[in-house]
Image (cartoon, rainbow, N blue to C red; front, side, top):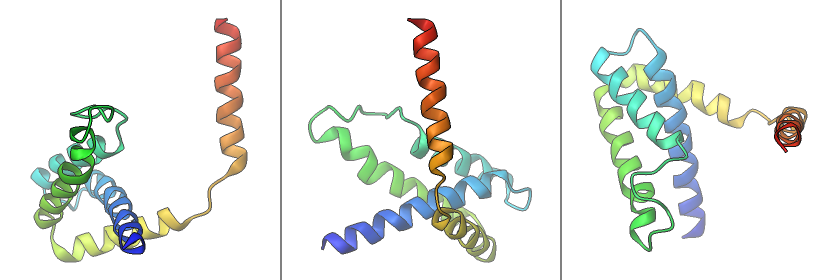
Length: 117
C-alpha cells in the first residue's frame, strides 16, 4: 500500500510539471492553458486554501483539490499533446539535482539574513 501511495505521488508530481509545461505552450487551447496555470500555481505554491495545521481539513486540499484539478485539466488538453507534456515532465523530474545549486541558494539566504541582522 505504501508503494502504491509513493507511485501515485510521483505521478502527481510529474503531472504538475506537465501542466506547467502545458500552460506555457501555445499549442494548448487558451482555456486549458488558463486552467493548467491555475492548478500548477496552486500545487506549487506554499500557500494553501486550508492551512495544513488545521486538523484533518488541512491536508484535504492536498489529497482532493490538487488531484481533482489535475484530472480536470488533463481532460481539457488533447491526448497527444498531454502525452508529449508528460514525457517532457518525466524527463525533467528524473534529472539529477544540483547540490552546488542548493549550496548557492543557502549561502545567498544566509548572507541576506546576516546583512538584515
